[in-house]
Length: 324
Length: 315
Image (cartoon, rainbow over all chains, first blue to last red; front, side, top):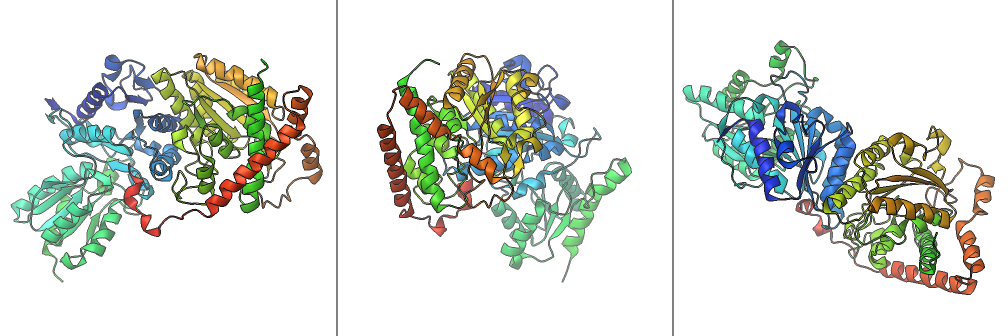
C-alpha cells in the first residue's frame, strides 16, 4: 500500500495497538482533532477515548504518566507535538533512562516519545534538539528517513522495552507516498542500513540528511565518485560496527547533522572513528552541520543554515579528492 | 474511625520501626534524612496498603514505605551501603529509592516532583486494568512549590485518577520556611484543581489515618483524587550532619515536646490497646532487628568493578 511518512507512522501505531491491548497513545489534540499534522489521524475513531487519550497542556506530567504506566507494564506512545518541547520532559527522560539500571534490572520503561521537528514546509517548530539526549544513558533515539522505515521503526520502538525518542521530520512527513508493507519489524532499534553502496566515500546520515545524501550521491555518481550512504536509523545507541566497517571500505567519511555542530550527536561518531579506525582513514573526518545559531526563520537564512545537496556533494567530492 | 486494634498496633509498629531506622542508619550516615517529629505521617500514610497499590513516597520516609509494602529489611539496609545484596545491586541508593517489585516508585534522579507524575501514570494503569488498586503520591512542602506538583494534581483531577496526594508538610524545605515557599495553604489548592482537600494535624496519627481511609476509599471506588496536607514539623535536621544554624533552637524544642510517638503511646495506653512494657519491648526488638540487618549489610559483598557494563543500562 502506498503511504506518506505520516500515514506509515499512524499505521504502525494502529497495528501495534491491534496486536497488544497494553499499547495506548496520548497527547494534546490527538483525539477528534487527529493530532498536529494528522499525526494520529483515525486512531481515535478506531480505538476510542480510553486508548487515545487527549491531554491537557502539561508536557512534563504527560511524560510522567507515560513513565508511570510503562513501569506497570503498559506501552504508552506519547505525542509531544514538537521537538522544542523536549526541554519540558528532560527530567522524566533522565529518570526513565536510569530506571532499568538503577532498579537492578527490575524496572522496564517501554515508552515511545514522538516529536515532530525539522526544517520543512510548516516553517515553525523546526528546532532539532535530539543531541541533548545523547548525554542520557538508557534512552534510544530513532530517526527514520522513508515511509517504510518509519513504519518498521515505529513498530520496533513500541516493542522496545526502553524509553525511545522517535523523531518525525516535518520535511519528510507529507513529502510523497511510497510503498509500505505492513509487516512485523524486520530489524530492532539499533542496526544502521546501507542506503547506497559505494567504494570512495562514506556519508553517515539520518532522516532528512539521508534523503539529501542520497541525492548528492547521484550527482557524485555522474562524476565517477561512488558515495556509500549509511542511514543510522537509530541515533542512540548508534551502530558502531556498520559505520566502522564502511570507513574501513572507503577510508573517507562525511558526517551529516541537522542539529547544530556544537554538541551534535554526530560528534560522538567522529570521536569513535578517530579512536577506532584511525589507521583506515585516508582523509580527515569531515562534518556538515548547521552553525551554533538558533534555527532561523527567513527561507534564505534557513537554506544557508542546513546542509543541502550541493554542499553535501561538494564536501564528499573534496574528501574523495583529498590527498595528504 | 472504626476501632481496630490490628490497625492501631500496626501503625505503632511502623512508627517504632521508623524511629529504629533513624537511630541505626542515622548513627552511621551523616546524610540520612531523619524523621524525628514526622513519624505519625509515615506510619498513618503507608500502613495497610494493598499489594497492588503503587507508592511514590517522600524521600523522608522512603524506607518506611518500602518496608510497609513488603520489602526485605536486609536488602534495604544493603542498599543504604551500596552492597550487592541490595535490590539495586549497589547501583543506586535505597534510602531514597525503594524496589519497584514492591510497587515503590523511588527517586531515580535527585529532582523532586516528577514522581508525582509517575504515580498518576501508575493510577492510570490501575484504571485500565480495573483492579481497584490506587497510587499514593507523598511529597514535602518544598516539592509543593514545583510545577510538577500542580500539573500532577490537575491531571489527576481531570482524569479522575485513583491517586491520594499527601503533602508531608514539615514546615521547612532544607532551610526555606514554608511561608517563603508557599503563597497560601497547600490543601486549599485542591478546590482549584477540582478535588477534595483537607488539612490534618500530622502529629496525630489517628487524624491522618482517618483522612487516608476516606481518600483511599474514594479512590478505590472511582471517585478520583484527594489532597491531604498533614501538617507536622521537622524536628530532625535536613540531614544528620545539618548544622541547623538557620532556625531557632527554641522552636525546635517546642515541637520536640509535641512528639507524635509519645502522644500515640499515651493514647494506646489510655485505650488499653498496648501497655508501656509491650511497646518498649517492641521498640527494643525493632532496634535490634534493624541493627542486626545493618550490621550484616556492612559485612555484605561489594559490587565487582568489572560489573560496570553499559549494556546493563538497556532492558
